[in-house]
Length: 358
Image 1 (cartoon, rainbow, N blue to C red):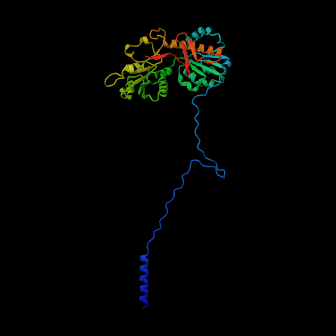
Image 2: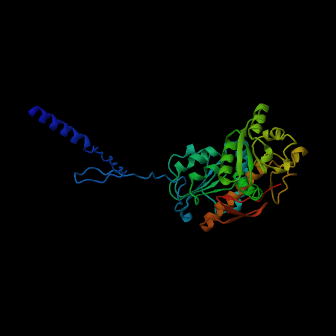
Image 3: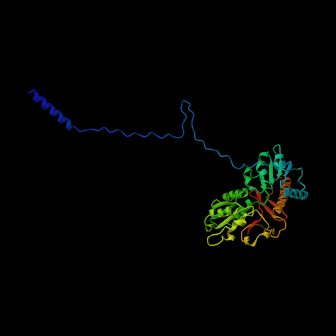
């Protein structure tokens, strides 16, 4: 009897467990920890605070200096290392200086290496070369002004705007003037000589017209280099104009490779920045359609005197005019009167020569 009762109780318990609902405990999702910020605040335990510090870039160009021309005590003149230009400079200087009575106490130097101490209260005429012009700022103290006879405008960032004026006709100015002729162009190709001149002028062109040109390449002297440079430009028909920057005669051979599948690239659509490389009267008829720099009021086509020497002598005369005006009137003149060119304005750190492309 007891056995039967135990069996009935056992079956009853099993039945109850089987009918009970099964429960599953769900784990809560893992919460993401808040992201750490870059800034760590200083705690009460004097833990150092970490901050993100902006990198302060040094200005690429010195700020304007305080110049008092009344305090100018002497003039230093840099002679050129070029034997021809040195003789020419000296002859022109001595000939013209008699017309400027306010210029006195002049000291002649051949190189900035001759300067042992920093210059102060000094008016400087020159240098004529890029090297000395590049290194001159380290020699300058207070109250100095430079009338540069170098046409290397690429070093202008080493000087404040109010401490230097470039008086030589410069290819950098020619690039600025070029803007009036290519303003309607939407795409430009630039071919520049593979040397210091070409690279500097190309960089200046690139900065001056960042939205204009679409392709560029340098070129050398050999036929292989010239042909390859043109091929790297791709389809020449894509360019509204082609700009050639060259201080040698390589551009003449280069033009021969400027051809499309149909014909030669139109020479009248080419602009050459060569800084008055050669006498125009010696220019072959084939190259005449190329747009080159010319001087208004001066017939350089029939000029017997080399352009380089003519412009150098002119820059010496202009330097003396500016120096005399500063010493007499205590300020830099806004315009210069020259026998050959008439009234010349001073803009953007250099003398604005009347240059045109044709």
